[in-house]
Length: 221
Image (cartoon, one colour):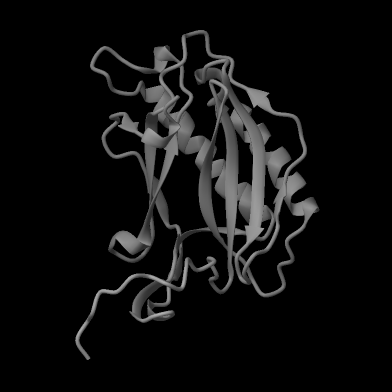
C-alpha cells in the first residue's frame, strides 16, 4: 500500500510504555520553572505513591548539597524537588514531593537560563532512540572559564549529582533508563498505526563530552 500523507485526525497519544515511569526534577531558574524529565524502569510490583515522591524528593534535595552542585549554582537557582508519574497506563496522576526547596549558594551572578551543561545518558544499544540528554542550567558566572567552557569542578559536581539521583531512584525501586515513546503513522484516518513500540533501556553510563556549554532555548526569560 503506498504511503499517503493525510491530515492527522486522531489527536495525540498519551504516553504509555510497559514498566515505565517518568521522574521530573523541578527547578526555578531566576523565577522561571524548568524541569529535567528522566525515564525510569520499574517492576510489576511497583505502586506509585506520595510516599515514593516525598522520599525521593528529600534524597534528591540532599544530593544537591552533597554533590557540591548547590555551592556552584546561583542563589536564584532553586531545586524544588521531584514529581513521579506512572506511564504504564494512560493519564495517571503525578505525585510531587512536599519538602521545601533548596537554593544555590554560589557567589557569582547567574548565567542566562538557557545556558546549560549537557549530560549524555548512554545505554548498551546504539542510536538516538537509545541515548538521552539531561540539560542542567542555573550555574553562576564563576563556572564559566576564560575560554567559555565549564570549570572542571562544576562538571564533576553535575555528574556527581546525577549519579546520586540515579542511586536515590533505585532506592525507591526505579532504575534510571532512556525512555523512547512509541511512534505512529496516520495512514487510515482517524486510526493510527503503531510503527514502533517504543523502548525503555537501562542507562549504563553518563558523560559530559567536551566541557562546552549548550543552549536550552525554552528556558529563556
